[in-house]
Amino acid sequence: MKPFVFVDRQIPPEALALLAEYCEVEVWDHQQGSIPKDLLREKLLKAVGLMTGGRWINEELLSQAPRLKAVSTISVGYNHFDLEAMKRRGVIGTHTPQVLDDTVADLTFALILSAARRVAELDRYVKEGHWKSGDGVKLFGKDVHHAKLGIVGMGRIGEAVARRAKFGFEMDVVYYNRTRKPEVETAMGVQYAPLNELLAVSDFVVLLTPLTPETTKLIGRQELALMKPDAVFINVSRGQTVDEEALIEALQNGTIGAAGLDVFEKEPLEQGHPFMNMSNVVTLPHIGSATTQTRNDMALLAARNMVEALTGETLPKHIVKELK
Ligand code: NAP
Image 1 (cartoon, rainbow, N blue to C red):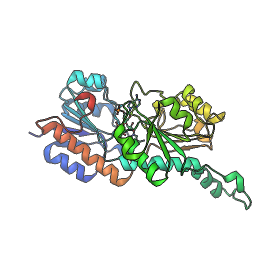
Image 2 (cartoon, rainbow, N blue to C red):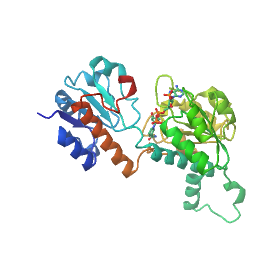
Image 3 (cartoon, protein in one colour):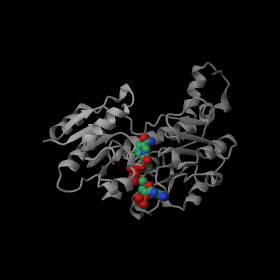
């Protein structure tokens, strides 16, 4: 008998076909809204595998899923996994690294350029009819090319951002990472700097660490105070890696110049949130990996991970490192 896998969102046909070859599959159409609790409980009771886009995998969910062996998330970040609870229950967790690196790096640059050259703000300015000849200096922005970029979290996506910065925009790149990476320094000509030094010297700071207990509010009031008054801060990691209240304050009182944000403490961002009225903040609805091609690739990899986890003789290649 094929193992039963529940998928809590629609996935592309190719990914579904792969899963269906090895597993009995049921899919919840998330465009109808979130799955009713009773229905989820019914599916979890028999699920051997769960494929998800970001559902909390915690003790409460695991206690309702007595047969569960594997959770495959269609994302590279897995801060929604309670790793201790999964370990206790022997549940494997997999994720989708690499296939999204270039797409997320492109989006990071979209935010850098948009915040520096005020693209979103000036698009509204034109469309709302404010453009007059002789506007001149009030439309000026900040150069990206040849500026100093600080990358906090030099992982797979961080490296893809560094490549674009060095070889596309001829930027001077410094990075801070938990583990120093001499091979990346040599290959790309980037320099390591302690976090406080990176913050003080960078024109642009990009945050790209995973969300963990150590990185929660990694950038707070003290760190923002170290940055240049015209620095641009970009967050593509997770909203909780930044103290959002401190960031709002820093942007309002000129401690830093501007921000480009794809992620927020609470998503979706609510109407009335201070960011909504700040012209020096570019806001995006958590779309780092959201291109059709990359989302298809991620779903296919997540399906492959699930099949490997349930039918393979060894641990799946993309098991999250804490559960190896
Ligand atoms: P990765 O390859 O694991 O890179 C993360 C890097 O952060 C690693 O080099 C790691 O260092 C470093 N790091 C971890 N904890 C740290 C700490 N306390 N201090 C300093 N550095 C630390 O991950 P990735 O694939 O590049 O993805 C990074 C994150 O981006 C994901 O976890 C996710 O949250 C986010 N993301 C967001 C979107 C979006 O849609 N906005 C899309 C994709 C990813 P070590 O080498 O020591 O482990």
